[in-house]
Length: 314
Length: 149
Image 1 (spheres, rainbow over the protein chains, first blue to last red):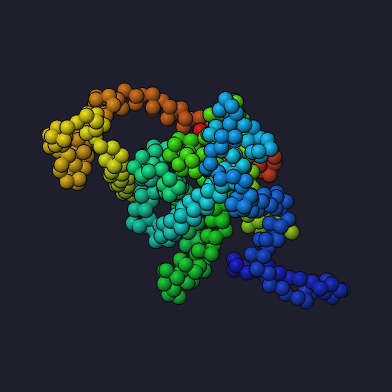
Image 2 (cartoon, each protein chain N blue to C red):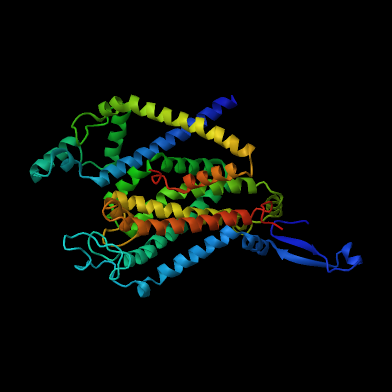
């Protein structure tokens, strides 16, 4: 089988005596469909996909599924002593310390956390890929300069940077996205730069340059397609990290406003009451765990599916 | 000769990073807090405020303030802390030995743990141990910088 990297030609027998030795049919199989074929044999990955579909469906249906307004504090939500109520018939998953329904907060919180995760990922992907490509492809002074910029960003301790920015700009969803993007884009830049550095020396790039294709075209049309595979893997695998990062920011008080629910917020609230009211911590914790698990499985599945030597190839 | 050029390039790069960090720190610390309130409290009359500003040169254009900051910093004068009213350099030097100890210890622990584990994982490629190590590494990598705690 020969390949130019994008399309493979598979040789297929149609049976019969002579056909056993001489292929009578050449079938063009795109590497993308082989990718999905390998993915479909990967049971843990399919499980991950199922989990994430479930999580997405449930959180997106929050307006219709949530029994109550997530920000509303109920008098019935607290015992006569003012303590939160556990899971019961009025409040399916119990209430938190202010009498708010946990199930509703969980559903709306999922929306927010996933939104933040996807936004941060998209921003870091765009910025990181752009910088990484320019740095890796053009080399020389540009590369040196951009690498120094990356080093400057990395020199700052993340927590201090996060706290500083959240002090300057009032805490909110946008600020959280900003902070997580600023601390996250360097990872993708490094990855992309490495990939581009190795791609730059491949024959088809050299051929394109010899023929006179402009740099911009080479970057966009020849290099980017080869970046898609590792980028998708990084994209899925960093979502758990971002969700947890948002949780940490909320724990530090630099996250979303306390009345707006997000899984990070719920964890922060719950951690104060883990002895007396463990359900406040338990359910968001389970939700984060499931989501992290799902995305990790999918990411691992992508990694195995794009590797032709993995055990899922046939 | 080549080594000298390489060293020079690295030093210039490091200076660049240092400069970048200085600019960002200066900007952030100016944006975070009003230094007069931080040093003297909130009960400052406006006339006193003007006096203090003129005395410390806080009415000068920002690039001039930045230049003064860098000039002093190179000479080891980082100003006085808002909280303790003592020179910042003193505080830094006081805790420097402990910080260095922590950093070196962390580095050694990192090397002593990760290199053998990496070699082990590579030797037993494909085994359960290998996949377990890969899993732990993966989890560690995807956590954000401040999420590990």
